Each structure stands twice: as C-alpha cells, then as structure tokens.
Picture (cartoon, rainbow, N blue to C red):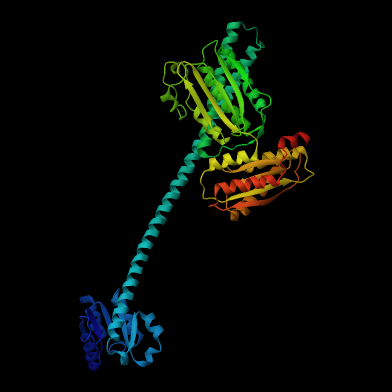
Length: 527
C-alpha cells in the first residue's frame, strides 16, 4: 500500500514510518517535508493514501489540507494535527480530509486503522460520485429524450388535428351534395317535377339507396376516426326494444323493397327495457340488416328479431338471412378493418370493409357482444347483446369490460332538487352524460337521482368537481328555456386500486339496495 507522508519534523517522520512498517500490512512510505514536493509526488505517482502534517515550511493550517485535497482527487487524505487543531475537527473534515489524528495518538495500529478506514470511506465516496455522474448523465439523456418526445408529441398532435380536420371537412363536403341529391330524388319520386313511370321510379329508388350507402360510409369513417381517438361518447340509458326495432325497420323497409327481399320483424312487445345508447344500437342493427339484404337474392326473406335471455340478463337482437353463408376461414376475418368476403357473391357486392368492425366496437361501447353463426349454402345469423336495464347487471358487465385496473373507483350520487321539473331532469340527464369520460358509467336511479361511477383517485375529485361546476354554469347559461336548479353530489363509496372485483360487486349491490328498487321507467311514467 503506497503512502505519501508530508512531515517536516524528522523525528515524527521516523516514528510514523516505524509504526507503519511494524504493521501486518505492507506499507511503502514516501516521505517529503514540503507541500510543493508533496504535490510533485502526487503528479508523478499514484498513492493509496496521503498523510499530512497541517503545518509545514511552505504552508500552514487548513490551507495545507485544502491545497492537498485539490491535487489528491480521489485519493484519501489524513491530517496530522497539533492539539489546538483537534478542537476544530469539523473544519478539518470540511477542508477535505477523510480523517485526522493528533500527533500524540500516532502509535501502535491507530494510524493503520485510520488509513484503512479512510481508504474505505473514500472508495464509497468515489463510487457515490461516479454513480452521481452517471445519474446526472442519465438525467441529461432523459431530459433530452423528454424534449424529443415532446417535440414528436406536438407534431403528432398537429398531424392528428390535421387528419381530424381533413376527415371533418371531407365528410361535410360529401354531406352537402348528398343532401341535395337525396332531396331532388325525393322531389322526382313524389311527382313534384312531373309524372314518373315505373321504370324511372325503380331507378330513382336505386339512386336513393346508393346515396344512403354513401352517407353510411361517411358515418362509418367519422366513427372510425373517433373510435381510434377515444373521443366517441355514449349516451347509455333505459330504452324500449320494440321502439328501437321499429325505428331501425323504418330505415330498412324501402331498401328491402328495392332488393325485392321481404323484411320480417319478430319482436315481442313484452321485452324488458335495455340499457344502451339507442343511436349506436340502431346503427348496428341497420349495418347488419343492410349486409343481409345485400347478400340475399330476390324473393328471399330477412328476419330482424329480438329475444330476452333472463339467465344472462340481456337482450339479443339479430338478423337472419338465407344468403350464401360464410365459410369458417372467412368468419375469422370479417370483423377486421377493411376486410370483405372474397367469394364470387362478394365480388358483386361493393363496400368499404369498415361496417362490421365498427358494429362490433359500437356493441362493446353498449356493454354487449357481437356474434355470427353461418353455414355455407344456408345463410347467416348476425346478432348482438345489450344488458337489461338493471344496475347490477350493467355494473357487472362494465367491470368485466374494464378488466384489471390499477385505478381506484369512486361511487358518487348526483341529485336535483325536489322542485326540478320534468324538462329540467331530462336536460340534466343529457348534461350528466356529457360529463362522462370514456371509462365512466352513469345509472339513473330515479327521475332526479343518478349514480356515477368514476375510475379515479379520491384526491383527483376536486379537479373533476371544479370542471363539472364550470361546465354546468355554461350549460344553464346557454339553455334557451332558462336555468336549471343547482345539483348536489356526494361520494357514496370509494374502492382502492387493489380492491377485489367480487368485493366491489358485493358493495355495489348493497349500495343499490339502499336506494329505491322501483324501476326508473315506473318513476318516469308517474313523473
């Protein structure tokens, strides 16, 4: 172990060297008496430790230690002090020494122990410094990467806005002439511009159908972009299935007549209410039915039906056709984007390959599943499910769709005052749905009461509430019918991120049981 000893007193020098040589470690001691000589030795050779008197001919006191510390770099330094310096131990260490010893204590193994401890401490300090430098370098690298990522994100946001504006502009530019085309076709078909014969009527009907097809394509493209961006909202509420089917069939009857296909409706009147976004459910029905009509031959029948499955707590809506059917391999592809059947029949049926993919995703937004059963040469059955309007069933499906999550869950009750009118409650229901983010869900417990499930930490609630209050003030300010009485809210229950799903479902059932079990439809009828 190489030791540099700076000591101008020859007797002290000899004592220190003798103590180190009598030790079990092999010390190689280089002695100098002046600070300048010590600095020169440090420049020329590598030492494991430097031991220095604080007072030498060309330096004295703390300045000696400070100067040596500058030149020692990562080599540990031990100060030899007179008694008056020992009382200033903290200043000695601050000057750069790893340790210090009074000259009177330099005997036996004391100096050797001090050297070993100083070397270990210096090694630890050097490791920490190297680690700090690496961390500093990594932080600088991370900051640079973060800046690059921010630049890329800004560019992506700009590109996304440009793409959205392009889609919106194209859809607007398409809708305007489409509307004109449909209006003029209607004028001609109604005979307002002169008498129309049967063949002309047939051709005008095809023009109207194709205009509707193009309008549906525009809707699909817009929905696809919104789904990809995660900004497609949903207004899920209790709906009547017979009314839903009736609305969808009114959009399909003329198309069925053009194809010379009989459209049959099989929907019991006593079906329970379902919970869904009715506009999206109708979109799915129309999409499935249009496909069935396209692949049906003149004279065939397409059946639009609905049934209740009380065991699974769901309504199933389906379309059955007697077309060519779909083989097993194609069944695996038809729900992918821009995929169409590749058989001979499909080549005569043109489409854009987005419809079934969007129908499947819209069904998931409505907490259901889209299925298909088909046999080549016999026909196909496309059907989808939506939950019945029961909070427990809806919440279970929402939890299944949510899957494993590391986000806490908050149950909040929102209510209007008893003096709120029916129109107020209906408008507020629209506003409450407007507040929903994609991962939230809302239950209407009564005409003036709602239960809102928010996947968020309770600490984030103040920010959410502030935004809700701001949006509400804007909403009532712009309401033509006048303001709505204020609403109140309260947190019913919170679940931590690691809460068990079964316990959450049990707590939710108990929460609902505390409320009135009277169906909302009954409330609304009485209201």
